[in-house]
Image (cartoon, rainbow, N blue to C red; front, side, top):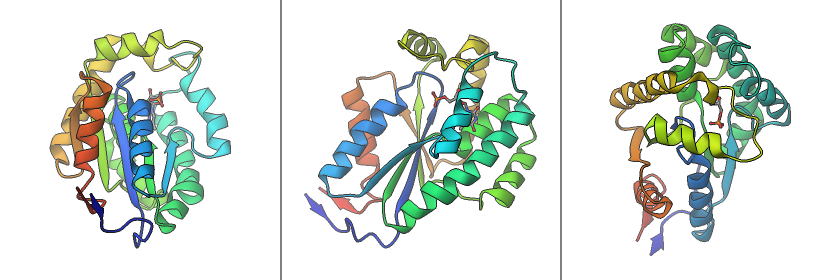
Length: 220
Ligand code: TMP
């Protein structure tokens, strides 16, 4: 195996993970992180909603409690505000530092959850993103594709979590979310890579690792 550029990447690479509930994003981020660290990359893992101390506080209000607590319009403003802080404080500094940034959800979640499903105009969401979030898009996005039935049953089985506000929106809602991701992936086939998540975590991880070689200049 030969790694052409490791710690000397001129600029870092920004990779996001997307999909419905319980599709295994955090497991895959963990596995990829270990793999990349073994290959001498500097890796920064982060997530949305969250990433900064303040956004992690706000996360609680978004992902717990009554499913009707916020409507999609309010949600899109909050997600946008905490994303700006996340970009300024965590993502851009890491990219500048040459790191590989692995982010659990980013702008595509807003486009799907608040836009395609929540019916906030996509044009407005993209304008917000441009005006407040530097129009920053990931270099690569892995969309983990799993039926909502399987995903939700995994998500709801998680012990010790009260983070189930979105999970409680029901199977029809989550089928719409999945359809939203299909639409988005078809529109951005180069950036968004669809991975069948109805598979062992090892198989999924090896697909992700091989899809990432080109962008990280890894020869094996
Ligand atoms: P997760 O981190 O466990 O996937 O949960 C975060 C929830 O927040 C998930 O249900 C999707 C939702 N969400 C949005 O609705 N819009 C967004 O922009 C983001 C980042 C997350």
